[in-house]
Amino acid sequence: MKKTINIITVLVLVLLITGCKDAKLKEGSNNLVTFKDSSLNIKTEDLYNELKEKYGINILLDLIDAKVLNQEYKDTEAMKTYVDVQVSSIKNYYETDEEFLNYIKSYGYENEDELREYFKLNYKRNLVVEKYVENMITENDINSYYENKIMGDITGSHILIESKATDSMTEEDQRKEKETALNKAKEAIQKIKDGTSFEDVAKEYSDDDSNYDNGGKMGTFNALELDDVTRQAYEKLKVGEYSTEPVETEYGYEIFFKEKEGEKPSLKEVKSKIIEKLRDEKLAADTTLQYKAMMEYRKSKGFAIKDELLNTYYDNTMKNLTSGNN
Image 1 (tube, rainbow, N blue to C red):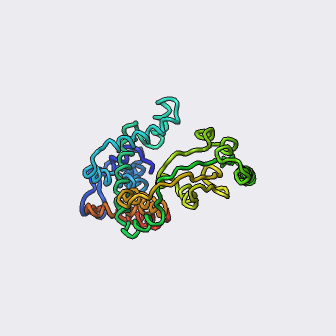
Image 2: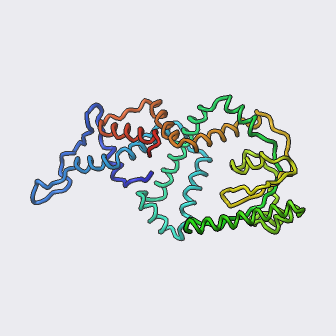
Image 3: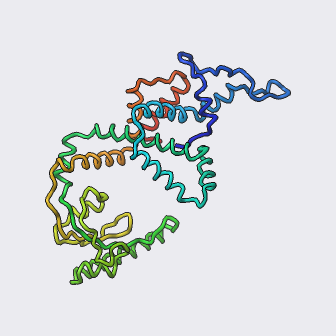
């Protein structure tokens, strides 16, 4: 959500009078801009109404959420780390502080502190969303995930064949690059079938410079730490088996080898991780949940918008966001 300039925040704050059909500014009838021809004068309320219509609901939602969230959720080290990472990820694109400030000012942030406050608010909203979605997860969901998807720790290796396809290429060029990578992956698999060790093929073919020189060894890891595609690939393998067909991943094509699999952990040991995984899956599958969560949270605080026009904007905005039409 883009933030707008400070004057809008000030104007939205100015006396939204409880019980009125529409909010009235204390000095709304005063002239803000005058002309020789007084019929052209612009009143304070003219500017307010224009700003309210275009930006009011977004700014008001930030104000509402900041009020209730800052009261319930105190600042923590985890939140500070999150904010630091978000700000640094933007700063790293710019060589100087001046370039960084010019960029964030183009989005309405006057300084880094304002940007940090936005990310703080975002972090606290995420806490509400996560709690809301976790409450949707049933014991049956957890047990089913445990029975069908939880494995013991895996010791494995992989061979990565990167695709050189980029978004800037034509569709035909992208297809050719992917085909080249796929054929190279198939060639690597054939070498393993013909008797060359997985380790030696990894040294010859793999594009993963972090481990190709040690035979593509990925070490020992918990399956819950893996992305879905990689986890599913390892699920299909028995100990001592490798992928007999290239597995397409976000990096290109991969070939996996399962060297060992430890004993399956107890449900108690992994329950919290399962809940996190199910929560993330639900959020990825339904983006409206984040808006529904905040709607319910505001309702739980007994909030009410007394300005009829802004209340209509809120209802319409939430209806649009929770219907998936955003």
